Length: 142
Image (cartoon, rainbow, N blue to C red; front, side):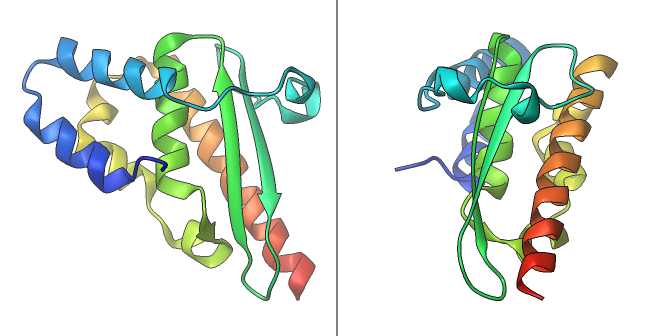
């Protein structure tokens, strides 16, 4: 079973030191399912990330389809951030994705103040890509 954003939030609240939180983020990344080599394509690469990040989107059916994401990165901490984004967005309906405030979630976790500007930009690029895919899914059903 995939980890939920609530579980991540609860686990974060138990960790006081940022080294422990970083270690936890890295462990989240290590727990991601393996990403198919064939999906490491330019089309799946998320632009704006210093590290390489790949993201695939599978769109379900219906007027407000659920979207399932799979992702990976070549950097340990970024792979953990990918895992957090997947916990936040994957499996949710397109309209839910568009109404989810990723910045507020990152702030609640305290990540906003502990990421380098490059990593924060990369995270925003990932969120932008996820939101774009959700918008496209809604347009396809309209």
